[in-house]
Length: 454
Image (cartoon, rainbow, N blue to C red; front, side, top):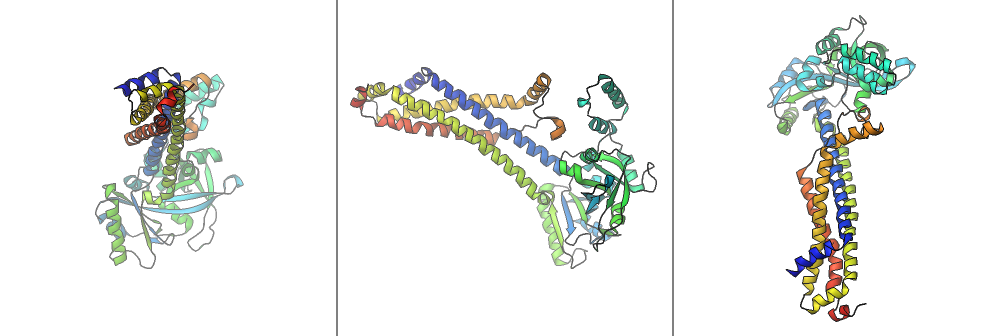
């Protein structure tokens, strides 16, 4: 009982113990908030990346050599777990807009069938969204100009006209009769200073490597996925338009597949790969094929995001380790300031293990209280971080998380219970370890020598 009594007495009578608790609580709050924001970013990133891609895809090893054949489509649709199939063509190209050559990536799709295999349609911008993004009302300082823009904005529809976009991708646009059409990312429009209805000049190589003549395309829509490179470099058109540009009638890059249950993607992939090796699949031989899930197609990108999350967690953990050193310093100073008291305790019957437990208990208690305080502060801060960011923005004019940079209107936060529990255990262990050395020094002091200590 004396150990518990002295533990609380030493803690409450020493202000430095409270300082150690506060320092540790701040470190724990950072350890809770930073990885939670990164976990939210990772979740949002995976969702945005996932939305533009199909569950599974099959591509030819030789570019642009996959035959466009109804038999192949029927076979793929008959595989167990496959819900929908859609063709696609992919090829790099050169963009010669305004006499400046830049690179881009072309993707040909069947827009109506693409709806069944991916969520790409959810990225299309309405006329109102596109107008707001291109004019950026937040940067307009003139009140009259701002009011005029807001008036125009209210007249525009707030939902994208997908039927018009699909029709113009397939049949052409009245804005430029006879020209093929495409849709592009928001960053592409901003970088090139273009609008819907403008034309761009593209050129690419044929399947034999010959450079084709430049061809004009008219922009009929825009999308925003939230990924800079995707929105800056990707141009989407119909399969037929891209086949004509490259000069590969009847050829594809591959097929996209939507699965009934993505958790069983490995089973569908294994069945398809087995049929290809056995020659059962109605595919031309001697070409070679790749069957990949959307995660495998972006394996390096997803690994990089996971590594960033791990690095942030490790960096914040080092802050906690540094804060735990304050526990060591407080208890070390306690040992030196309570030499005579500890000697008297030993003289009246306290054991070495009892003295050790006294200091280790103090370490655990400081760590526990600091952890609880830090957890409460971290969870509250993470829960209301968007309100805090909005208040900072309204007060100072500076936004710590500008939506026009990150393309997210809110800061994503996801608390992971397993990570919080792990942080709790690590903090308690660090508190105990920080107390072992001072506790051992106190336990090993000879009682008589300690009583005579000046």
